[in-house]
Image 1 (cartoon, rainbow, N blue to C red):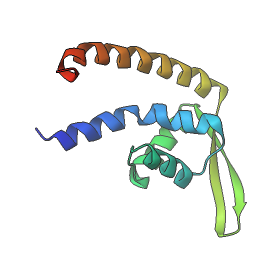
Image 2 (image 1 turned 90 degrees about the vertical axis):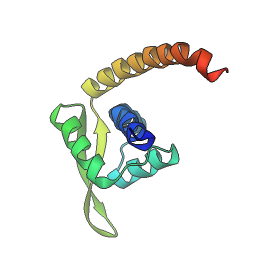
Image 3 (image 1 turned 120 degrees about the vertical axis):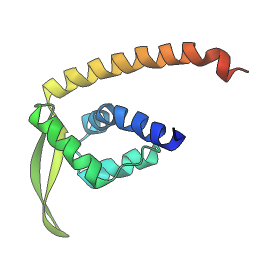
Length: 112
């Protein structure tokens, strides 16, 4: 088993949470979302992000609007819905619980 594969799967597992958190702060264009994820070392490519954005939109957690662009065709900007905000809050609570459990479980290993 390769460590890099496991690390990539762990990152994918929290992308939904991170994308919703980013969009909850302000409307965002997909390339802006990718940049913010990269800043936090959650490397993502468009081929991963667009299907996720579509799933979140189909689940009524995100919405979008079109904005004119000076650099080409109109762009889709995503925003979080009220249902998405509630869902995000649940994910944050779950992440906090999981984070605490993992920290407790690995405490002895990390402190060696």
